[in-house]
Image (cartoon, rainbow, N blue to C red; front, top):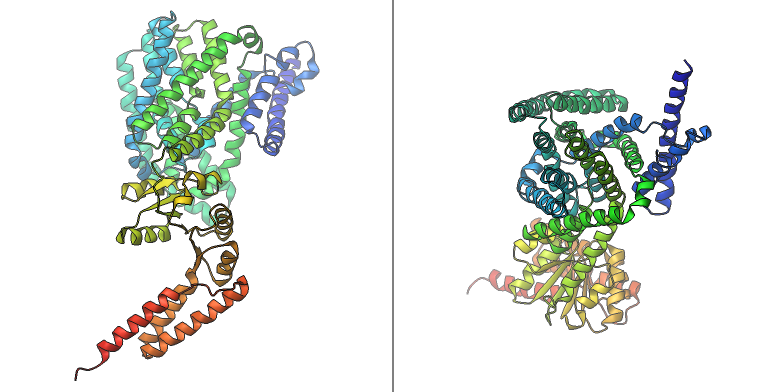
Amino acid sequence: MAGETSIGGHGLSDALTILGAAGIVIPAFARLKISPVIGFILVGIIAGPFALGALARDHPWLHTVSISEPKSIEPFAELGIILLLFSAGLHISFRRLRAMRNAVFGVGIAELLGAALLIGAGLYAFGASLALSVALGLALAMSSTALVLPITGTERAVGRSAFAMLLFEDLALVPMLFLIELIGGHAETGEFVRTAILGLLVVGAMLVLGRLALPGLFAQAARTKSPELFLSISLLTVILASLATGAVGLSPILGALIAGILIAETDYSAEVEAITTPLAGLALGIFLITVGMRIDLPELMHNWPAILGAAAAVLVVKAIVTTLLLRASGIRPAVAVETGVVMASPSETSLIVIGAAASAGIIATADAEFWTTVTALGLTVTPLLAAAGNRMARRVENDVLDDGAYSGKQRVVIFGFGRVGRMVSDMLIAHGKPYLAVDSDVDGVRRAREAGYSVIFGDVRRPELADRLHLGHASALVLTMDDPVLVAQLTRRVRGWVPELPIIARARDTAHAAQLYKAGVTDAVPEALEASLQLAEAVLVDVGAPMGPVIASIHEKRAELRGQIMSDAQLVEEPTLGRRRIREDVQATGAASKRSTPAT
């Protein structure tokens, strides 16, 4: 009885340690602007069996701040991975998967096999057996879905590129485990074929049942307005899907991913995501603590050159392979570099593959512990890799601007390539005027370049961009962004550098136009004003008002607004607002009068 109480007490203290870590690490590291990933891993290292956990045997009071039974929380870590994959699935739809199929089964296959081949060849060259080289090559070639996706997201170009490769790795986990068991002599080919067939049948049944049943279940939950019911249905879906794929020999992770995709196809994915996000965040914390507990500090201090060298070699090989493959597939250099660096760390599934290889007798216990420490160390530095990749991507982006490809003289530079920037570009093309547009929407830039527009990616908020674009040699600068503060800031900044440069800016209204004239624009065009005047002109003509008086009243209104802008901006000279339009209207009126005069 006493033993049961002691075990229960230890289990309770472990739970309190984890929950306390989540409550302290997340806000503390957020205040320090450091990824909480590092904090959770540090908690696992400090409270784990190789630090305070080892001391707790001699000092019982340390049980309250240490993990006394590391294996007891591993199921929670597995649940954390499942919930993270479920969250990733909520951001995907079947339409998006179809669009990604070339990346998943093209770059995804090449990245996994290419990295595995190089890592395995390196191990073989250092004396490892062929079986050991294959097993470790496959294990270390995988990247961390649990860490990379929360860092990159799935909306940015980096996140989409990473997700395509990570998705293939998750799909390849089961065949990989069967291959290791075949190498170790613990599995048969017939068993693999049976699992593959059963897996296809189960996944197909899940897709059919999910699309039929889930919309009705969530609709009923929506009618009750019960968040608890939403959460219950979501967790039930994840658990059933994971159990179904696990029952036929597939990874439970695959079932969780499919469950997320099925819910993403319903109208309730946003509500489900909002409800399950805190739970997934806590589960991620538990998983990261278990990663930290795997880092053997005495072994690391005793054998640190070999461990750090092995980890660095894996990171470099994977980063180079991934970057080169993404560039070969047509991905922009900055995106390829950032994705390659953030994908360089090993994966939580690497630990699963290493464990399977150890169970199959391919890897000795000492080697398994060594590579487990290497993997855990690689997972620890993933947030640092993400930050380094982002900096390297910015440097590559600057080098692209420095290479002289966009340094042509007497061209119009357009900041922003939305509907307004595209229209300006179309008119410049129609009149044979050279131009260059800059926009920060990666996908928009790609589509525009495919359509033949001269557009580059760039963040116009960065002061050094003006230098790299050689605005001193430009014929004009056009600011089309729908951000009043940013347009005014850019105007003042560029006007200070290039006093004689014509700057034409998009304004929201007359008040914004006055602010821009104060900032130094040459011309400000209030889009709401011009649209309103044209709309009023069309209405008056269509209801029967004579053309001449209508145009005259429009001119008067425009003159009144010019006076208002002059007063607000304290201008000495009248702004050119609408002056060119006035001449066009007069010419149009003359032409209309000639057409309306009857022939004599």
